[in-house]
Amino acid sequence: MKEKVQKAIDQIRPGLQADGGDAELAEVTADGIVKVRLTGACQGCPMSQMTLKMGIEKVIKNQIPEIKEVVSV
Image 1: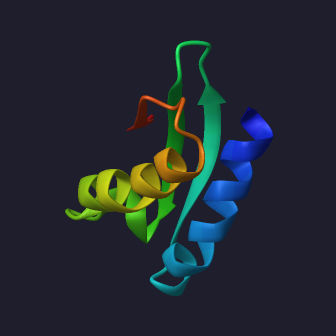
Image 2: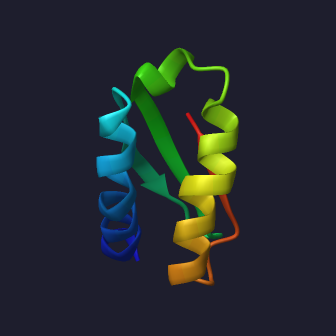
Image 3: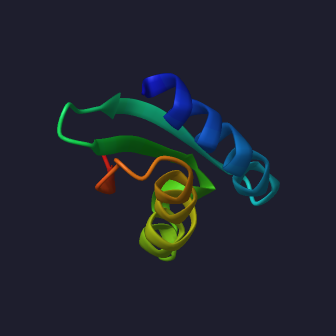
């Protein structure tokens, strides 16, 4: 499962990097929670929660329906 999540994040990564940010996969829990670490410009951005939920989480959940939530660590 972790490999699938990493592939989904890798698809989103170029858009984040274009704005000076990035996302790293920290953990995928057994109960379907994905933990990501936002870095670079994303780390302190006031829009980071929207990026996390409407961007990263949406793509991951579309590709891997068993994922319940994406959270920032």
